[in-house]
Length: 165
Image 1 (cartoon, rainbow, N blue to C red):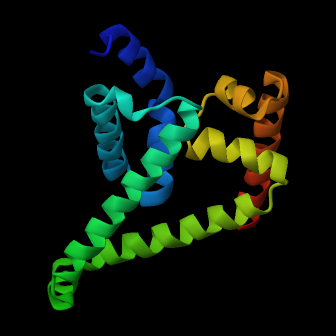
Image 2 (cartoon, rainbow, N blue to C red):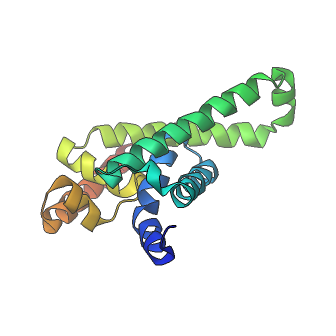
Image 3 (cartoon, helix red, strand yellow):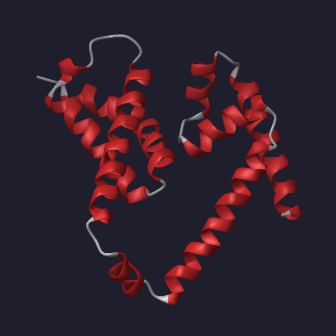
C-alpha cells in the first residue's frame, strides 16, 4: 500500500512535469489533465510499475506514451465521424478562432526557434513542461541563478521578437 502523504508529495512535485509532457503531445489542456489523472491513478494502484531508476525519466516516458494513446484514440474516433458532420457542426467563429490560434502558435514556434539552445532548453522546460526553476537547475546540473538568467534573457528575446511578428 502506498503512503498517502508520500503520494501527495509525489503528486505535488511531479504533476507539472506530467502535465507539461502530455500538453506538449496533445496541445489540449483538458486531455493533458486527463493524462495526469491516469498516470497518478496508475502510480497509486500499481506502485510496483516503477522499478527504480530516474523517476522523472520514467514519468516523462509514461506520460508521453499515455498521451500518444489518447491521440490514437482521438484519431480513431474522428475517423468514425463523417467529415460532413464535422463541417456542419463547426461555426464560422470556431473556424476563425482556430485559424487565429494556428497563426499565433506558428509565430511562437518561430520565435522560440530563434533562441539560443541554452535559453530554449530552460524556457521550454519552464513554460511548456511546467517545471520549476529549482527542478530545471537540478535536472540540467546548472546553478539556479544561471537558470533564472537564461529564462529571463530568453523571455526578453521573445518579447523583442513578438514586436516584429
